[in-house]
Length: 300
Image (cartoon, rainbow, N blue to C red):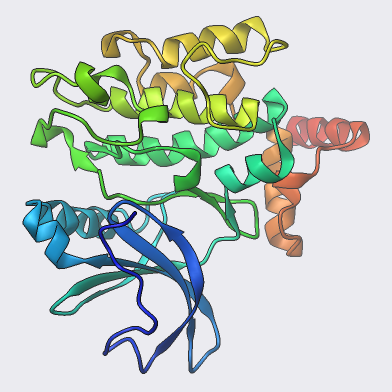
């Protein structure tokens, strides 16, 4: 159940510009609609948050922080782009580009992923997190449903409702338990456990674990039987109970499994140049392409 109630129509000034097409998702604090621009017929995602329940729970500063952090990261790769913020006396509305699906949807539709595919998505998520951490921002609620994928196979991190900065020195419970580290979860969330960027590292591990399983994980040790030893070891580091033992986002991106592949770089370039949607995300290179890419690399 959400603290924000569903509406049949948007209030002004949005009513005259956008019509509701369907509900995309219902969260603890917000409802996300797919809306259509009545002039251009273009569809968008519109996040609606009801102010009064947030005010009663002293959460209005959190609401303002979400909009501020999104605006500050408008040009950060792999972070959802906030297009418009609208305030009324009763609600706050955040408008975004519409994505095709989330990684959670992908798991439901296709089941467990091979390690190679899961690492490809993890790398995109890590690049987005790297941009956040570089400015001291902690997302604090990374999970597959908050990792959106557009029609070109590009991932974007969304839902900054729990986000904060390291300077805020926040403590206590937050996020989603299935992907949250011990320092933010349940009785283990002690008041002296200040949240750092290592919160997101644990959650990235939980997201990667979900992709490999094709479902919500049942704890850090819930892993596929055929998992490679190197991947098993990496997950152990990401989801270590001690935050200090987890790698930083820069250290994580330096791991061989997350190094950007030359073939994928060239495929991404070809996709953009020839306007082939999703090529880099959906098709593996043939041996001939692999050899050709190696030749191109040597000639460069």
